[in-house]
Length: 109
Image (cartoon, rainbow, N blue to C red):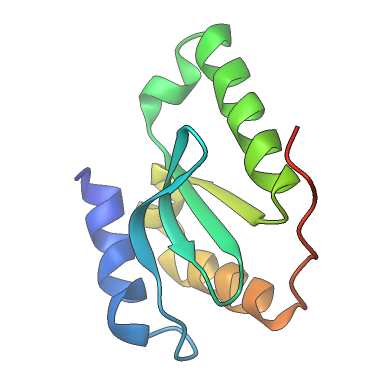
């Protein structure tokens, strides 16, 4: 597991964020989400440098995100540097998103 994921997981596991349970490496269709909270229907994805190396990688990320969102799952994306430089801000964004009502599921494409 990349270092940024280890750091974020250390803050998400064991219901440390508002008592919500998060899972690692959760599958949705043919895609895998870095972190998922089933109760809040929230996916969290961390992107390292490889996600910015080619247009093909960026297109894949967007296709993946659209599919996951079409399943009614809220989606947060952070880059590794967000974790290293602003972990408190990342956790605040997650906390604020958990405070919002979940979206109803949609029919996947």
